Length: 228
Picture (cartoon, helix red, strand yellow):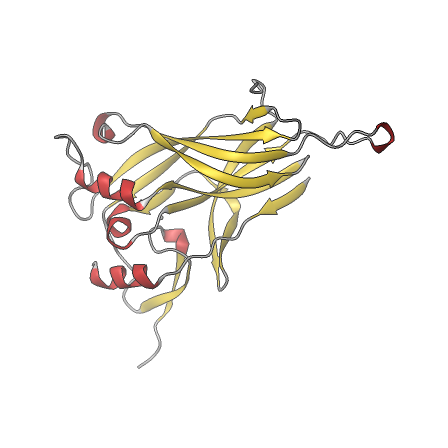
């Protein structure tokens, strides 16, 4: 099964400044399947997906609301359909999928009752037949992070106090169009995120190294500070 992925690259100047001033017909039996989520792996060229799957993430809504930066994670989406091309019969392959969107639902109950029900993320990614794809998605954007801090309509935020955190369950589903024009959707899969209002940086004695985002722990590296 072939692998496909997109590398994330992000300009960090605004976030670095914020960090320094503040103490990440529909197929009912889907052949397009979200198998897992993968966090970020940082290197000098930006971010790609971590080798091991992750069961959840951590997002600093406080820093995101101040300096920007969305929560990022890779969704592994497999196209399980084999190719059906037959040149002898003049038939082109129709089992590739043009990924069109990824829906994210927020569990907006109890402490998070003021959040919207979710959002739809546009996607432009071709998944070849019998392929394993790593698609970066941003399920929480800076505007939602600001709402998470402030609350709404008299409902207070569970993370209003600096240093506080609260869990939020996300549910993700992918949608696309097959080569024959038919619609297809994936399974729904849950992904919990711990949302915090901390804005903490690298520990004492260390400094920021390679990074692609500063709003989640797997988006940057801390390294030993240069000796004076």
